[in-house]
Length: 103
Image 1 (spheres, rainbow, N blue to C red):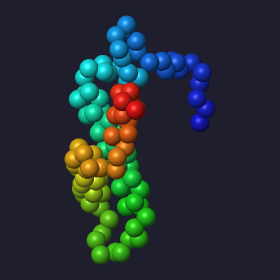
Image 2: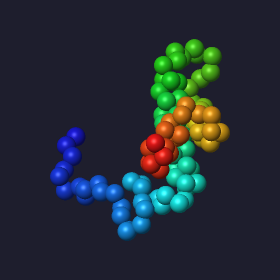
Image 3: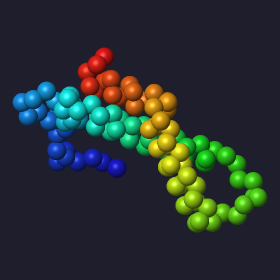
């Protein structure tokens, strides 16, 4: 897959105020914190999905669309709860510190 050079350049948003790379104002750390938790949640969901692929099939339960949907929704909810609990894997905290300039 070839990426074209016609893509827009990625530049930080600057409106004259004190802005971070994400465009969130430095005086609004709660929104930045929520965004960082969202990134951690997505990462954890992907990790859980890949971990499930590594588990051998036992044959105890038949493969079905309903089981796949339930498992996917369960993994999403677990990832969201872990990320929003503040005791996740630390990715959201590291992102928050980096993007807010507190480091």
